[in-house]
Image (tube, rainbow, N blue to C red):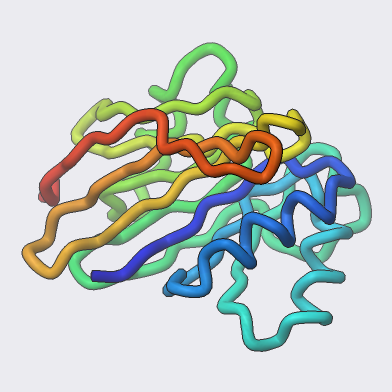
Length: 174
């Protein structure tokens, strides 16, 4: 199993961002989905041992992070973006279409500050929610199981305690 830790929209809440990362030393990748690039870069510099990857969001002025990226984890091709370029506040159709254009079967995004986990156009779309909503910082853990399943856990950290709020299993879509 490989665990992907998804974090987005920290908006200056570095302490909460780091706390979530510290809770998950098992993470294969820590994926940051924008709007907090400054703290992402500082955390990356302070913790070179952490497997961090990130994209920038609409509030990451001056960031050199890319707007979009594609990673491959086992049989999954995953499109990473903040989401603001794809109209995610109105739905994920544009996002999943872009993911398909990149040959991806999953898309991870932020921007809306709302946790989201669904399938559209054959693409798994996951939004971890926002870290900055402390004391209920939201994030997601995505497990890629040895049998090819993707398991999505939408999670929150409330007053230092983790609560896995929803669980859904998906199979590779193509």
